[in-house]
Image 1 (cartoon, rainbow, N blue to C red):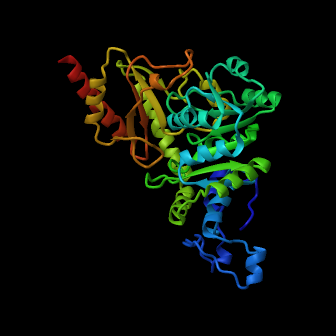
Image 2 (tube, rainbow, N blue to C red):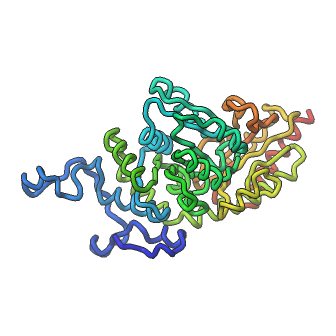
Image 3 (spheres, helix red, strand yellow):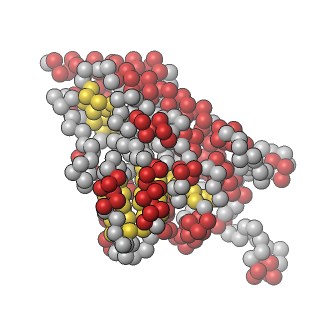
Length: 395
């Protein structure tokens, strides 16, 4: 495949990487190879395994197209695809951890990651602790002689804490630890963790890269020995992704910058509108100046995605939030995000916290995702929902 200048901006790379038209009859988009068996010309060739492709599960030109494209936009040596974002998380963790190891995870970590760690690590004899991402002194105090990994989410997918990446990397180097980060919120467009020394990057392709809420996929990006370890685990665990989903995700990648830009602009505009409403106590959006980690967000990120949350004042009941959400016509009620349409969902943050000093909203908490719709329509939709909620409260 064609090599591109590393100085090109990531927005340009998304439009061009992962293509091989001049080895595909001039056709820009890669073909979809659906196969398990790959035939050899001779038995000698089969025995020597000298062919580029040996078995469908181990890779095809279709999977190579997306792998090479994502590695290029992160300026990394390589990556592996996984069957979901969660599968990418477990692939990354299991590739670099073994019995007896200890890992530190932010208390704001994605709920399914928390569940995996709490339910599976004890039987694997892997120890863990959660840390407040806003207290790096506390984090360093939790490190012991068995600690191998510091795991990060920045921002946290529920409460949107932003961590000081440079300081985390310093701690990792000081104690000879590896760092893993879930970078789904920002994607490579808004933040590249490798520039700051992070070892392994995870992203849910399900979200912004695929962009259409119809695909489940993840990716783990790495360099050197970390990449080798991840490739080994992927092969041994039989991790496989449908070639049709790969093709669709590669097509989604081409429009990632423009979709993310629209989603970002919508989220900031709606967040500013919502912080002016009397019923809302705080808006957890890192791009807002009032956010406690706004300075760190400005330091590290080129933009903000469409995902944020609002905390309502305590006198607002859960029933009132139901009235608001049920009135919405444009915003769907459901999990996930990163697609073209907007969503809302409620969060039980208190039930997924282990550290006493972590931020826990006291009032009802609503997570909001803004898609590609017109911002006037999104504001009007929320205004109608708030109006219905106020009528309910006043009864």
